Length: 434
Picture: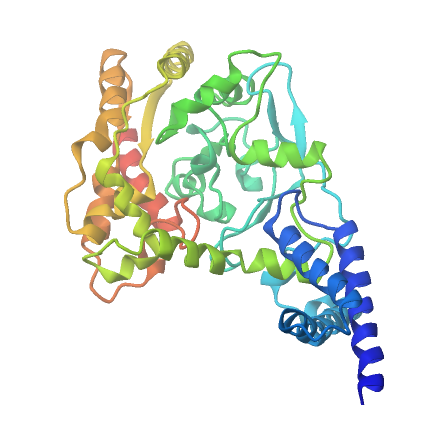
């Protein structure tokens, strides 16, 4: 019996080792991925098993016992690859979005000589990187307009608009369809708005995009969305010869110039790892915040609201803060020159908006230091200022006890706003437009 059993285990171990080594050589996720080290460990186990097959040591018996399950998993994924080759549509879209058999990144970034330095190309498909929820919870891709921004074709064709919106991913509308962005909502309510928002933009980049693309649209209003802590991005633009692009556009730009940083995987096994990232996140978050007690248990997925308890939003990098205020001062000058009114809107983070309902406590005053500084700045410079924090907080606090997560003003997994949040903000803006 031993003689017939030995070759079988030996062959399985050899097969597993060869396949796993080939997978590591052709590893299709970014360098440093935890999956690489997990597979490396399993490969070493299989490799050791080849030479220790005759040993009666309990440790090696355990190692050998893993070889058949590993072999089975490999065969299953071989079959999946074959099925995907025949008919990819059999697999759910939540898995398919993480697969790119070509194994390369599509070039969607274009570079400019001056601020904003980088943006998306016209008429290209932009795909958001990293896991941010299922395809129902987050829209990962959209097509840019003729200038390279996130607008409906009907708006992109206009020579003049009522409002030009500038900002980062909240202005762009990361994670929602073009119809559900703040600029599109304003347009649907009778205030034609062109969206110049780009994920990851700093205030000086907002100014640059306005100068290059917004002034010619002759807007009556310029609305800048300032996201909590965005001032810190300015430090990456002090030296124009050594710029590091920030946020989402920076991630996509890095992937474009470095093929090793991939949006997607070539193999289904790797795609499954990417797709299930949220499950691992939940486990880590529950462990990290296990001691936090929530008043409203519906907010269990958002236990990180607790960090607000000791948070002080006062700007720590004074040089970046000064650069931010300078950018808004310059935007205000541009507004005055073209006869438009400048509206500066502060966008709070999800943790701030959910804090009171989740924790049963008032938001600490230190959270508002940054907004208070911007409000005083706006008052001195005759800029219209909006902080919709308590509009959003009151909406959340007044939801019925049986509310669902989809009723909240932010996306379920990702920290950007959904249509509900943008609707609330649009009402605050329209109140200033009339």
